[in-house]
Structure formats: structure tokens, C-alpha cells
Amino acid sequence: MQSIMKTLLAFSVITLIAGCSSHYVVATKEGQVLLTKGKPQVDESTGLMIFTDEDGHKHAIDNNDISQVVER
Image 1 (cartoon, rainbow, N blue to C red):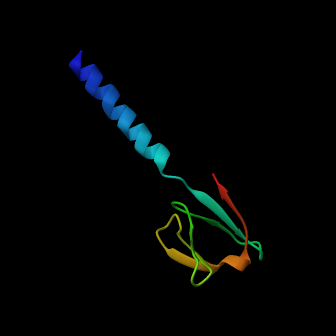
Image 2: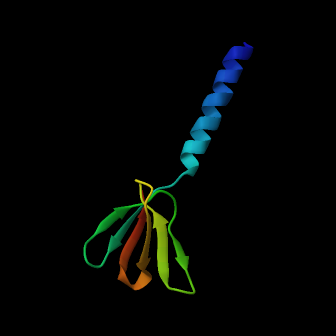
């Protein structure tokens, strides 16, 4: 009985952690589509949207060049 409870607890924790990591699609006005790992952040002092793509590369794009950001 305890092993079943431990298994269910582990599964619940893994599911919760996986559900918390959101990915976004960033579309630029030029038609470029970028897939992010995590929510993009806007640096108010520079006006740049900063995010990490799915390959782990950091990007900084002028917020005026972004047409849409959608959570997927």
C-alpha cells in the first residue's frame, strides 16, 4: 500500500512540475515565428522582449517588432 502511495505522489509531483513550465510562441511583424522556453519578459528600460528559445539560446527583440505572443 505504501509503495502505491509513493508512486502516486511521485507521479503527481512530476505532473505538477511539467504543468508549470509554460512555452510561448512569439511572432514578429516580419513573419518570423519563435518558440520560447518559459514566459518572455519585457525590459522596460530598453523596450526589448527577452526570452530563451527551445534550444537554449537567448534572444532580445525590440518589443515594437513583436506582433503577437501566444501561450501554447
